[in-house]
View 1 (cartoon, rainbow, N blue to C red):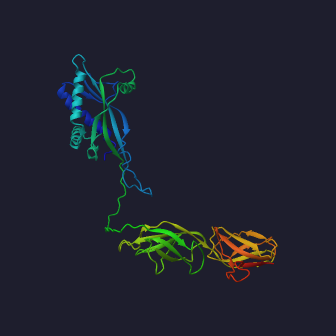
View 2: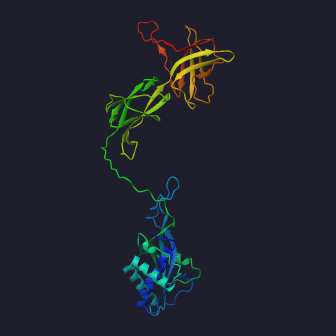
View 3: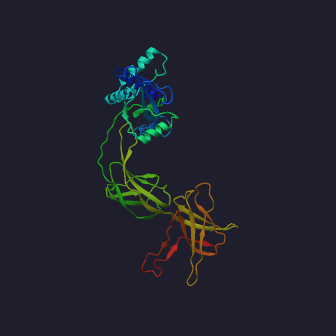
Length: 411
């Protein structure tokens, strides 16, 4: 890439190239680099840079320039196109402007590129004449792309707009060229990456890992509770099941279409997710296998297990609930009470919220102020998942399918 001297170097090399060409064709013709309303040559060519624009092809080629921690990973660069106005002067009687125009156009059509050797030769000649020349540090010759000059097909209206910016300046024979592309790079040193110690290539077959169903869809917490994932491509050499943020391993006897996994004791009640992940070992240099394929995410509900509920008074009536798994501080829990009465009496129902907690303590405590005396069926709702009620399952019993517990006695 090139530094900030690139634009001035392009103009200088272009001027010297055209100076040699028109001097040979039209003796006495000179090349200047001033505004067209200033000290223009009496005969010759004036080169004026009237506009600079961003090059669309190279504009974002340097992105990204910084990593996620703001460290410089590559030098920022700006890609520019240079727009030059070439104005021709001389005696109209002997067609000097037109002769100089023909010489300049022929030269730029024959040599549209500024070669590296041409740029280096111009800079060397300038430094030889003046060791402190302002272009001595130019490195345009090292730019990855060469600067190419192409004529701009400006209409008479566009050309008149360009000349209108020069106050009270008479129009002179002119033509516009574009020099593209100039890449100006920041003089900063990016952080280099560490060398590769070992190259490892792993090829694995592409297979689809898909969960079609979770059975049961709703399960009550138990120390040995398991769920079954059904689908395709579930089992591999190294398979884990991601249950929320906790990793589980398939049970023995699992197959690619049926995966059994035990629920971790730390899993929270509520709506949980399951995802099957296949891992790939990356050799001795990588102690942990990396995920290579993952299934879709399936949801299931883990119900809390309400072990017991007891009432205590003493001036501050409360219901103490022992529940599994432990309820997190950010989980929403509600205690639902349904009074057990003999028809046609109407039962009372209550919804209680727990006391504030600073730690994840067991059990939960609910204020029971205002709850009428009686026996109540108790359910605990945690993040939308409700604990189960026991019921009579013997069809021969007269109270078949009635709920029998758990209960709490309010006195």
